[in-house]
Image (tube, rainbow, N blue to C red; front, side, top):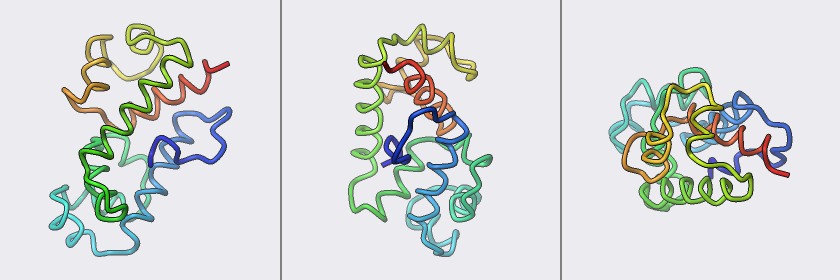
Length: 144
């Protein structure tokens, strides 16, 4: 479920993780018409089309909430629960990697402050798949 999209994440980069998210979302769309997926989930049709195509570059700016909405129809788990589980997993990994939000903000390429990282991980503001990939890659790099 996004946070475990790679079976063996050792050495994974943000690009590797984003590609894994794209593959997971493409499987969730499973060849369905992007317009139908958009109607059913409320995501923009262009986002659904990028998911169907497995376009990792286009998915970097997609919000976790939109990805969770698409995964809901495939997994049968409410989108809010999926997004919460992803965020909870990331916060637990922060402990293992001994990272705080200010360090994450300083180390990733996304233009976020520590406060913005915290708000995104708490679900109070948007978290894109690109930002998620960068945060996870940093945690993988820092986990002993």
